[in-house]
Amino acid sequence: MKTIEVDGIKVRIQIWDTAGQERYQTITKQYYRRAQGIFLVYDISSERSYQHIVKWASDVDEYAPDGVQKILIGNKADEEHKRQVPKEQGLQLAREYGMDFYETSACSNLNIKESFTRLTELVLQAHRKELDELRGLPRAPTLAQLEEDESSPWGANTPKTCWC
Image (cartoon, rainbow, N blue to C red; front, top):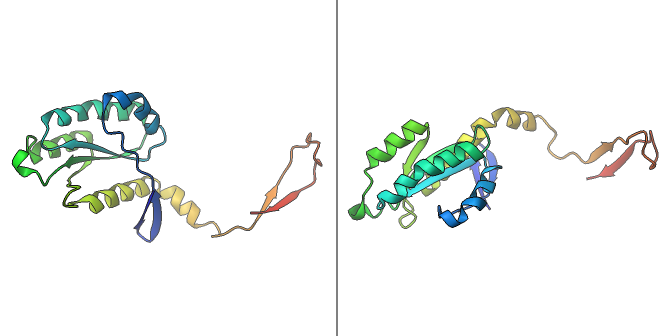
């Protein structure tokens, strides 16, 4: 878990790295179901990893919820001398899928914070209405009113309270 602050809102993000390997494919599809933001990552020094993005994007479209936010990432930007996938090719694919695009490097920390912040912003924008409704709620409700089913043997029509 990591916490990022965007527009004064502290957002706790949970990151699942599925490594893009076929042997994890069935598990990966389960992660998509509740995802709100997804990075599709390829290695700029591997044309093969870039080619797999099309399949991963198709899986995301099939298994992730509607409106999931996506960003295409070309990783290992510090290995320019090994580059097999031109930056323009990544940009073009991102445009085709309607995604933002970053080239990153985990080694040099290039665009790591920026890409995570941007994905968080996109998720917040997609859920702006829910956020605005939450902001209108009192910060720390301390008392909850419970209503019981009339057929309940625990004291029908008797309102209960609890301290939360």
